[in-house]
Image (tube, rainbow, N blue to C red):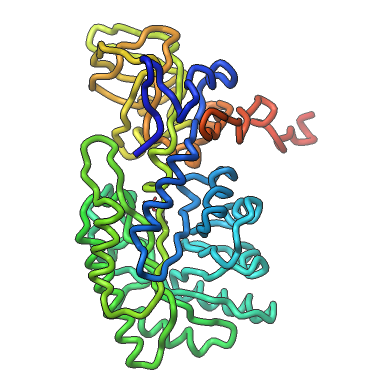
Length: 417
Ligand SMILES: *Cc1c(COP(=O)(O)O)cnc(C)c1O
């Protein structure tokens, strides 16, 4: 479901013609639809009606302040993986008690910041991390709330780079070591055990790995119960996939029903950390065709956005649909490529795309998740602006970077001046 549709042959973002936005802010640009984000949150929330739950939006999928503020207003929380993401959440007015902190490599500075902010809990990924959190909390005279992220050794059947719940992955604590770690944790003076956590991967299309994960967590909760260790929260992570091409992921209702069924008999409350399913289809990347090059073997449509702006096709070989802002009947088999000096700089390869000419506007769909957040300044390219749309209003919520921005803080050493 999204709010990017054609009306009279022109692409609209909600009630704003995309061309009007481009006339004001230029290309390339990310455009987000508030209505789409709201609807995704509400649909997900309603699917879990009947069980006590908290939706902690995965900030790494889209960390713009506008997006975070919207989810905060809707009553959601956040799943963060760095101090920078925590800083953003606080700036956006997110309730610290609704923030969970995941990630295998939290630094002491990040732990300290999160303790001072008063976050809900740390999702702990190793014994050493647990010991460090205990030490820092004790120095501050505080108690740190934690869940242990377990690695359930379940194959999410997704791209290897975004599989996280297999024993060979760096994430979480192996199931057979987790119980012992809980026993260590409950003895620590500055630790409070609040839950158990897992996240097995991203862009999951199959529902069975989710079901298996719940069953494994249920088993560990039961085992811990027999040892007198109990807690309120079970964090099931994120990972629900979306349709980029022809994937048929479970609907939020199907996902929720499978989880409710597998979780039957558990008395805990649940945390979910959806990212992609909330934000992906709520965003597009609009780019202008610079040149069309007809090689002897191939046609290249060269656009003004590059892999530094949106890296998913290059990094994962990911499919992202490409549409034309002006509706076009005709298609052409071509590679849509960016200006970066890498052959991996493409948005599509060998597939039918709109038959766009020089100056036409194209948009890469489903770019609201892992789009801007994975962007960089490679090739010294200023990053694109982000625009937030609500009905027939739009506002730039992050301006286009300038050449000055590219060098902020950089200097020439004194001996070369
Ligand atoms: C990336 C991530 C998520 C979100 O994954 P999506 O596939 O975007 O839903 C949730 N939790 C953790 C710990 C993550 O690393």
